Length: 440
Image (tube, rainbow, N blue to C red; front, side):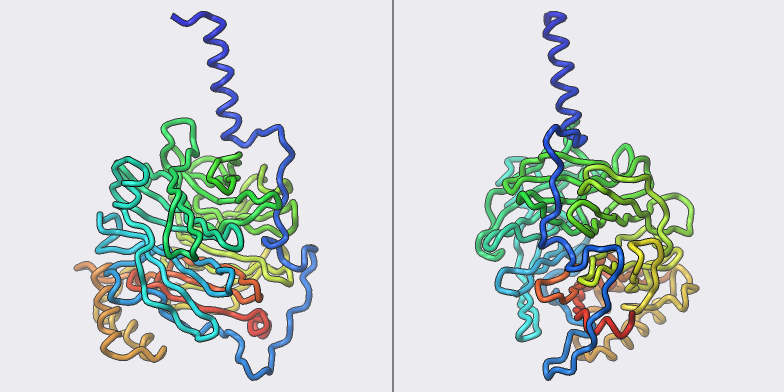
């Protein structure tokens, strides 16, 4: 039987462990690395660069397909990272349906010089994860890829052994050959209590000491966002909570200078209309302000954002009251106080008034018109439309879904966006900041 003294020591150790996971570290807080920050770090945005008249046409948001139709029937939740040589590597999960045992993490490469995406290949499978971790894995989801150094990538992704997404655990794998192979699989211990319900969606950032600022969220016994500080080997150094309660998940972090960051989150409240949720930090993400509602609608759906070199914030969101049938680029010139829509990326909203479900004929006709406008061959159109109708249509009708956007700013300043197009394929659009200047 433990003595009173040993019992007190156990309590102290437990309290220390809990404090560590809440980010109450005695070491000085880190600061954001220069490569995670915009050129302009003042509160006043700089003038935007004028549109170029060079021979090389700047990126203007032309749609490109990332995932090939012959890879998987369903695709979702893409992320993208820039490689050391300037190429992009996009990742997503795909399979026969969300949550199926055949779901794997897939990837494809984009060559900016050629302007094309490569063939799709599986990066990480359920079986490989199961073997590496020595534990049963039921399903995979939500990959987020980032570059740790010149020659090393990290892939964070979710796995479930029992139950649904609320019981997820977070994993990390490393690659030293631009994603051709993966090693050092690791299940990250993000909670001292059963290590359950940690999911990932937002873009990681770097601290000046080489550690990673990874936004995560929880869906069990509360819905809230957190920011993990992770060493390059996967050790959790600290974590801070962005929100409390049950109403905000999937944080997107926006570092604006070495100490200050903003965050946008998905509102998961019970009553529509929803808006995005916003909070801020003056301590590099270690502590956060009380959350408040942003000024644009966000119907309980994922969003993405990035800080432009001029200091303006650029976000992509479903800015409707209830549906994901519109995807919009929004800009803030005052660090999130106000937001202005500048471009509809996708729009089947009928100015936000389209019904929750539309007849199958209306759905397929609208998708066919959009694909034809984008120049897709008819034979390929039918295959993607078949995938969309299988995923999004029931006897009561169909729902448009343009969702789960993910944004990065490449080293040359180009803004790259990937998102899910009606669960049928991952779409890519790229915008030069010079080209965006005409809309802002």
